[in-house]
Amino acid sequence: MRYELYYWPEIQGRGEYVRLALEEAGAAYVDVARESAGTPEMMRMMEEGDTPPFAPPFLKAGKLVIGQTANILLYLGARHGLAPKTEAGKLWVHQLQLTISDLVLEIHDTHHPLGPSLYYEDQKAPAKRRSEDFWKERVPKYLGYFERVLKENGGAYVTGRRVTYVDLSLFQIVEGLRYAFPKRMKAFEGDVPQVLELHDRVAMRPNIKAYLASDRRIAFNESGIFRRYKELDA
Amino acid sequence: MRYELYYWPEIQGRGEYVRLALEEAGAAYVDVARESAGTPEMMRMMEEGDTPPFAPPFLKAGKLVIGQTANILLYLGARHGLAPKTEAGKLWVHQLQLTISDLVLEIHDTHHPLGPSLYYEDQKAPAKRRSEDFWKERVPKYLGYFERVLKENGGAYVTGRRVTYVDLSLFQIVEGLRYAFPKRMKAFEGDVPQVLELHDRVAMRPNIKAYLASDRRIAFNESGIFRRYKELDA
Image (cartoon, rainbow over all chains, first blue to last red; front, side, top):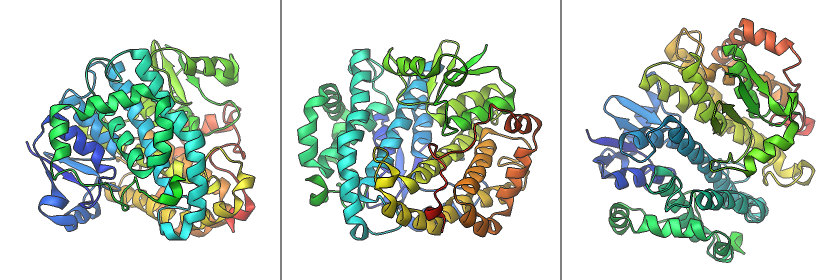
């Protein structure tokens, strides 16, 4: 079966967490809006049927259409060995992924504190204040939490010896924060050495390494979740 | 087995989605921070162990400790007939719940657009702007989506004839929006008749009705997610 991934073609965004899992798994997939039908087919799927996705990304797997990033990863994790096999392990990894989902929303809020409908240009001052708070309170809390989880499990990855979809997502968080806030992230990195080692370990995995070097990996840009606005990085 | 729910004792907050599911299921549970050990035990559990929760609510089920609201509901739904039995049905209901999680975060942002660490009093002007956008763009999008899902399934509940944890959560969203934004919600309600009917149907379910009338149901207040600030409702 070839999966069909539906996501905005110009950005990494939330689709990237799914792409990383598909790539690590070596799964056959088509990134529909980029490679074939464009966004009209994606829009049509959100407008039709009994179980429409609320927003991209969503994944077509045979007859199933699965929406919400963490839900897609829950599904893929079980099928491609990217999550533990026990119920407790599955719930734990999903719990961590949902914490990453919350973090991703807070990252989005750093440049859109007044909501997703207004332009960044119309909310620069609040964005500056939100970014301050984000780096003072939230990044230490979130990444400090993952640092602690990594330490306590003492392994290469969050659950120990085997990579899971959460590890791939944590890699992406580090990449994204380095892109969007190079100065702030550089000053912070010393506090989370295990998270950084995890990042490097993921980057060296053969399938991920090949993916990152390919043109399937879209470059970060200012339409995505992680945006480099110099004034927010000071 | 008696479940142990860990959540802040003074508010409905995110814990309420779990309480509603436990109550509908008629499950035996103790609301630990309210009924016995208070918050110190909750804090201790977040500071110890290999798989610490990031934040309340979390649920202890035998040896399992499960964090993240939607993850707890995923677990409870499967055990108490509050979700479909098929894989497709389980994923669909979880997907809807994750969409509600996103909405809950946006509701929180209406009074805390500059982040959760600052007081509301220090962000009243941005909160006003965010609330405007929330009601203009986001409420119609989210509740319009659930209205459509209800219509297309033609049933009493989001998946048809049987109640699921998502229906209980949608009930809570309506209750909360009515509490926090009485004027705005009143003006909007005509657009989502099916959502309102669902709300009323949930409120009449015997276990939910008994719960709402009991002192286990905490009153809405200005420490929770849904806060009534007159200036944001105009």
